[in-house]
Every structure is written in C-alpha cells, then in structure tokens.
Length: 439
Image (cartoon, rainbow, N blue to C red; front, side):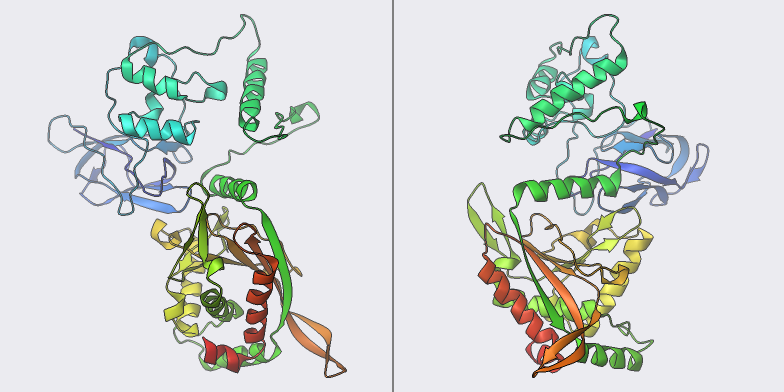
C-alpha cells in the first residue's frame, strides 16, 4: 500500500481546496496520471499520482480543504505499507509539515482539529518547522484555537497540553463568542488604539447566508490587510491624452488581426511606458525591508496585471518587459488574462513581480484608489478612456483622456518622485512616436 500525502506546493502554501477528483475508489491508475485538482491561495494545481495501482480510498470531497501533509489517497501498488517522504513542488518552500519528533500522548491526541488553516503566529510556525513538528497535530491552547509556541514545545516533549476551560452548562455560542473576544483583543494588542470587536450575531435581525472565505478570496483578503496596515499609501493622479495613441492602436490592431499579439490593447502600451518610467525612477521598482531598514532595488522588470478570475483577484506577471516589444507584451497579456479567467494559471505565473497595473477601464469608472501589491512599493490604476473637452492652444477641443492613479509607499518615495514618474508616463502616452522611440 502506498499512502500519498498532499505535497509542499511552494510559496508557503499550507492547504488546497479540492476542485475535482480524477479517480474513485476501485479505479486503476498509472503513475503520473491526474489524481486530484486542488485550488490554493494562488492557483489551481493538478496533482499527478506518484504511483500506479488500484485506488483504495481518497480523502475528502469536492469543496473540502486538504492540508499539506494530510493523506490524499491510498493506492495499492503491490508493495507493503509505505508512508513516503513528502515530495516537493518545483517552486517548493518549507511548509509546516514534517514527521513529529516524538509520539504524542493520549491526552494530546484527544482534541482533533477540523480541516483548515492552523491559527498560529509566524514565529510559532517557524519554531514548528525547526523542530520538525506538524502543526496540524498540535492541540491548541490559545484563544480561538490558536497554537502557541508552548504548545509546540510541549508536544515535542510529550507533555500534556493545557486547554481553555469552559464553564459547565455554558452554551456553545457563548463559548465561541468569548473566544472571539479574547482572540480579537490579542490581535489588537500589538497596535496602539486598534480595537477589534467581534461581529454581532446578524441572524438576530433576519435571515443570513454564510460562505467560507477560501482559497484565492482569502489570499486577497490577507494581502490587502497586510498592505494597508504596513504601507503608508499616498496617491498621485493625472490624465494622459491618448487620442493619437488610440488612433495608432486601432489601426495596428486591425492590420495585425489574427496574428500573434494582434489583440492590441491600451494596457500593452501602458506596460511599456511603465517599464521605461521604472528604469528612470528605480525607487518604484523596489521593496523595503523594514527589519534590515534597507531598500532593495530590483534590476529586472516584471509587471503584474490584475485579473478578475471570477473567484477573486489574481496577479499574473509579464516577465522581462524591458526586453519585449509591445506586440510580445500584448500576446502575454492575452494569454495570462485568458488563463486567469479559466483558472489554469500556475504558481510560477504569479511569482517575481516588481510593479503592478490594475485596469478598471474595461468595466467603467472614472478613477480608482488601488492598493499596493505587497511587498511591492507602487501600483498604477487605469480608469476608462473618456472623451473630454480640454484646452489646446487656447481652443476647446475634444480629446480622449486616460485617468491614471499611482499609489505608492511614502516610506521610500515622496510626492515629487511620483509626479515626475507619472508626468513622464503622460508625456510618452500622449505621443505614440515618442513612446515607440523611447521604449
């Protein structure tokens, strides 16, 4: 028998939601045949079977969550019982999974945790990795089921773990509410004047529906909170006259129809203009390490484009935009956007970004205030192109204007830096000849 566990999927991913099973118990499967498709915080991943044989059992149904290190399937491969060393994905990063260093006591086995992420601080996770402890096996003693550093140490030593006491006869909903309050108080304690209160019971006022915050949507929520708490956002806004550029773009799009990269969008030109701007203003192509108190300047240009996947926002990355033509960039945009909507992007497609562009112009809207894609330090928001009356040489004329908003990290740049960066972009986008020459 071969017991296959969910492998390390990379990027610090600890779990995946089951989207599709390719086999059922009793089926015969060959090595490397598709076994299960799971959706992580970043992308949908099809996991192949590492062994061939008869499928004895599978773990979980569609919609369930599997943690890294949990059994995915048991396969009769004609060999004796075997628990394999956990395989690693191509982009693997150490996860909270390893064989425990000691056998847990009966008391430790008692409180079972349902499938889902393990509440624990980064320091506790790091301690567990260093000690070779699977956090899923550690009974929690902290508020709201949080695993503490002491829990990990006690588990490793085989000691009984204290659990939160509850009053005899107290109703479960009151216990949960108290735990929520304790957890909220602990979460807020590190930030002065921040008071996180538990939500009221909305069901008291009428009917409600509940949906678990999972996979991509949960990742977006975490990233946005991280960004807004850690980064002091400032925004600089301007408009680019793209009348001439739009005429050129539409003419070339019609001429190149059906060819690779022929689906020319305005975004492709903006990506090229942004790349040129980043070369002239390297502070916006950087990251800030607050612990070492240093700015990391990146000498490569990988531009992320925000895509509405239908399940949440994903940001695939166009690599080496400084070395690609506008036609090549247009082809990359079309491919990444399509695969983003289909849910077929992989982890590698969303790694290594240095700057992000989000475009709401296709959906309408005159402007936006984008949130920086941490740990980047700036993001450009594009609104929809609109015909507006503007003054040119003392005359009122109708021009096509593109609203632009640069949100940036005020720790590494000032308003004057942003004004120069956006001003140069406006200058290039207003003259397609200049844009082509300088990029």
